Length: 290
Image (tube, rainbow, N blue to C red; front, side, top):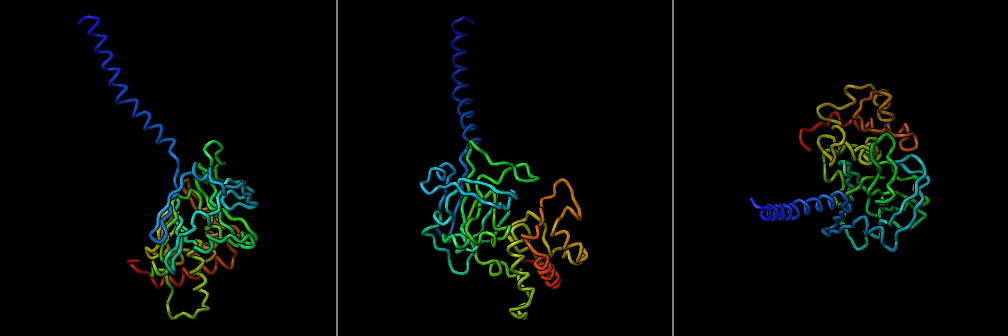
């Protein structure tokens, strides 16, 4: 083969490499550095907000959270008022906003709670993790709370439950209220309105349902079902179950353990007892289908 033909063939291979490999490398680079997006679907309307877009908004602010639930200390974030992202959206009556995280965690949040702007109450913010100044890792985790995290300020921020601070958020979606969506969660309808098991149900929905199902009912499978095939009140003592909810590692621990438990300021002993009472009640209401 002549030198000129070898050069021509080499040019062809180089051209082929450039045409195939370089675009793939460019595509790979774009995927790795892709702008995270928050999806919102409420009342038949959808919106999307990218990280960079959010950080360029005129209403972005530096928000100080004196007692951050996820990090357990004071934190400061670049954040956008969540109410501003939801303005003009009208969820159907008797619905909640399901906040879905990357790992499947699914909190049920009242719409009016997320859209409040009165600082005398609790105000929701969407904290956004900048790509150039990433947040620290969460305690005992290998990742941060980003890219999106719902944090709270205002005089009543302390009243917001620990599971109503969803981090690694990817989607907000309107859904029927939990008991309407999953009747298998409900207590015996014959119970009076003041029965403690009804209070236990409300606590369970807020604090336990984001990770667990019960009777197969729920949107998350981060943790096991708490009534199928057996209810934990049937194989654990009341004291043992109370200790497990308070601090799982005080009862048993393993490398893949995810549940962090609840500090006394997140759930009182009485509130844990209400959840245990609800679980005891539901042991007799086991159902094969949600």
